[in-house]
Image 1 (cartoon, rainbow, N blue to C red):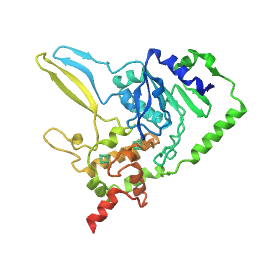
Image 2 (image 1 turned 45 degrees about the vertical axis):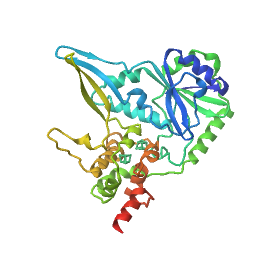
Image 3 (image 1 turned 120 degrees about the vertical axis):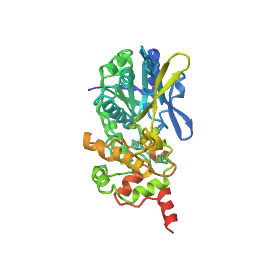
Length: 353
Ligand code: SF4
Ligand code: SF4
């Protein structure tokens, strides 16, 4: 892998040059503690001082609702209008790992052209990060990244160490090669190692993800799930914000007077009541507790059995989002018999008083 250096003062100049032929997305600050990925026209709006965005970059790859094709009795017209040339800058390692999980999911048994075309047209420019108290990526081993990006920028105060992860990334550097320096000094390498060591020490959470597949199995009938089901609002926020959640629904939207329909696709959530509904009015997971079991089986057990790692990248979004404290941290700790102070634990104590 090729590694080069870029002076921080040259970052925006480089970004402006590479953004000419593509929609350029980057994090911007929306409120004191909320960031989002947005299309950038004014580069001074980019704010890299963030931990996690409200929604992950999956919203850029596959929007929450888009048209897949138009169908009539005689004709099928695919619609790829959600696809355009894009560059996403400022993605953190956990979100890059999530994209790699998405890549696997959407190409495993069937190649999803709607995802694939969008992904092929998108360049990923990662950026280093610093954890807060909700980050769990060290436990999921997603705090460092080795694949899934075209360029990765590690912040070393006045310099970036830039990792070139693909030939497309190399092409970007070649648009303005004089901005980059190929000679990394011993001092640069020392600074890099020191930063990495300090960053690793800054994590305050530690979850035993290795134990989760067995604990999910052993505690599948545990009363914990009833407690969680009592508290869950079935709002679907956890799956919307999760960078690895990929379930979707397909809707047939008839166009009146034209004898055809638009077939659209929108994000779905396994925590919503209708998710497991079938024709005839039956529902295989009417209880909220059953739906939460499905979510956590996917995150903590089945993906590990198949791919050797959890379908959680430790981004902490479910932790900061769920209004009743049901998240991968509190559920994992509870499965591991640790006391956690949560809304749902306090609720169940109230009920049993
Ligand atoms: S677990 Fe939390 S975020 Fe998810 S559906 Fe239930 S209440 Fe909403
Ligand atoms: S389960 Fe929670 S912490 Fe894990 S990837 Fe999804 S939102 Fe992030």
